[in-house]
Amino acid sequence: MKALSGVAVRAIAAAVPTDVARTQDYEYLNPEERLRFQKATGIASRHIVRDGQCASDLCIAAAEQAFEYLDWSRDSVGVLVLITQTGDQPVPATAIVIQQKLGLPQNCVAFDVNLGCSSYPYGLAIVGSMMQSLGINRALLLIGDVSSRVCAKHDKSSWPLFGDAGSATALELDEHATPIHLDLMSDGSGKDAIIIPGGGLASKRPPPLQGTVQIEASADGTLRRPDNLILRGADIFSFAISKVPLSIRRAVDAGGTTPDDIDLLVLHQANKMINDTIAKKLGFTPDKVPTSIEHYGNTSSASIPVTLCTNASLFREARTIAVSGFGVGLSWGSAVLQLPANSILTCVESDAIY
Amino acid sequence: MTIEAFIEKFSFAIEVEPSTLDADTDFKALDIWDSLNTLSIIAMADADFNVALSGQDVESSRTVGDLWQVVKAKSKLL
Image (cartoon, helix red, strand yellow):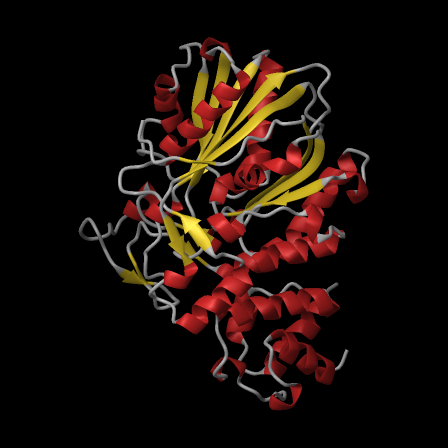
């Protein structure tokens, strides 16, 4: 895969809602199980939206913070891509609604992309390629999910894992920018590892599901609605520890660098055991692998920007980082990129509904 | 690698004494067994045997010996 040249990251911002759900308060696990869950996953708390707040709201809050920091004219933004799997409505694309809410011009390209945990490297590739090939100077890459809205609260295999968050990455054409090296992968044979089976048109093929809401017991015995998320954690775990280190290594190799040249490794925050294993395989010590999972849980598509912004103090100087996102699809990808000094803004809390 | 070595790694992964397990142990019937142990076993197989076990591999094995057969078969494919 060719490197993405001439595109620079100018700012990265992230927003989470204010309400906190603590692992120690989760009523469907007993106190001993809560401790064990917290130790294994690393998740002590998550931030969860109140009724009415959407992924778009969290992404707009992050975008507003980026605009304030950069002092960009809204008219200068030519691309707005939103990556989410929990958009505001099935149709139209949420990005187009955000174009109007953010006051971006009508000559701004706006569309949604349906990806989850792999969103960050994919988003850099999608937006950066469009900027380069179409000559669009400035872009906003918004990435966020409100996973709490699609998990059943009693589902111990999903509810205590996910937190809600939105993010904004501001990108600009810059002929002096260090090339971004990418590795992007897909494997649809793993589609059932993380899936919301109902709600799409395939679930309405004959014979159609009866009624508007149907509760069904999955193979694990948990009752879920067809539009609830099912997560098969063991399969994701196995996939992540075997495939992700190779992907990161390919992205690092593509730049002619070694892990020693990478200041920080920023991984999708799915589970502490997964990330410890990946870091160990690649020879990264824990001090080079910042986290956010302890405060915010698995923030799905937004986890990489959320982790950056949670650790904003590490980015007061320019950094070369490797990022890797992996999960639903299966889809995974890695990128090696440079972040200019002070480009990572501190994670904000927002309950605003735009 | 022998099954004795596998049993030792298995017991370490799920934090029980090696002497409490043998090839015939029905591991999912152990009091301490839960879904997080499945992840620990997958991590162990990866780290110590360089084998990628799936959730289904663990699910469809009844005894420690059954799972050892899966690990052995998968490591031969490498």
